[in-house]
Length: 211
Image (cartoon, rainbow, N blue to C red; front, side):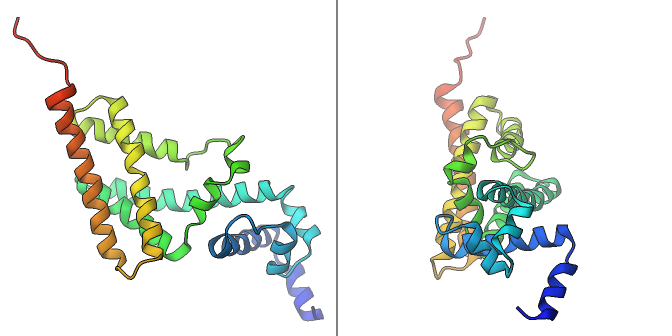
């Protein structure tokens, strides 16, 4: 490392340095997964020492939690903007799905790989950007618009959340366009909602008897 590079490195603010460490970690997770990660590898990719990485993060788990929180915050905010602008339930599903698949296309399966890491799921503190919060937000809308009980709405919403993730993985390994995959995913989500509503009305809803 030459003198000029060293000077540039020292001039970075703590927040900028921390952000760059997270950026390099995200690149590794996207390309090679979580298993290959180490503080030494991250430092090498970022062009800094392992000890400097530890200056900003107490452990690899601490670093990965920070990365997951950052990625979820970005994704959830984009999806929330779509949800708030939607005028119909179809627009909501289409907008949220579009943002998710666009994110996957640009960023890869970073969130999915991080959430599958046992060390992150254990002792994870829920935040405003958690899947659970997003599920309950959409479930309230589903319960109101499809006139089904909230517990049923939560179940169908939680299960349907798995469709975009599967679609995202398919998108990364398929020649099919993202737009076409998006259409298929939206059709499947809306179809599942309508099927559950019909099933509830025709089979599960308590029988109404005249007095």
